[in-house]
Length: 213
Length: 80
Image (cartoon, rainbow over all chains, first blue to last red; front, side, top):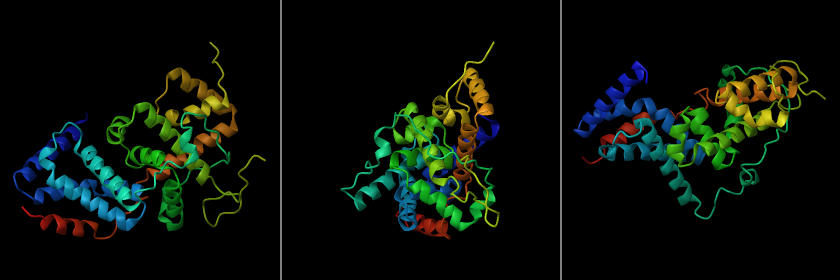
């Protein structure tokens, strides 16, 4: 663990102690760095902003009320994401009690080979492109179109940048499953977001042939 | 010593682990040799790397305005 990380862990432990001793304001400082993480986790599961806000807030309130039971066995962030994940799942079950998200065909043969559909050549995508709402929406839609198994792993690993170990803790699946699902999720997304026939993500740039045929 | 060749299907299977640097040095060398000769696999590698960059950008999901004001209000109103 780096010096910076251990310092932040130490001050986090201090903040937790202060909250447990009744200093409510210290909780704002404790959760502030993770608000985005909590919200992004919530929206990736419930998929709409109104429910995501409700879930995210409920999760943070739950963390506050149960902070005394946090034993520091995992990182605070992992514990918080786990609460958020459970809240979001509960929200989904309440909203659609008869619907199971296992209808996606691609999910059934998780261990089978994945054959990419599209061999389009991509130039690196500048991250400024995400400032374009249309493109941000396209990426979000593509993520939402993944089945829950793949989406959850992708969100925790690639959006939240959690480690494989942290992801196994939150989802309760093996390291092997984390890797297989992440792999599948990335390749599915690549297929879905590969440049269209006119082959260009960058607006106002001329047509460029991207396929080898 | 000559590097043992690897097929496209084997390369696709390992692309994600390759990006995460979660493969052996030997496999990495074989994959790199394959990429240098195979435009299709290179396209898939670049595209997948783009995906990881795009979704990990941090601005993908934007938190609603005044989210924390509403949150702190709720925390303040919790019974002690």
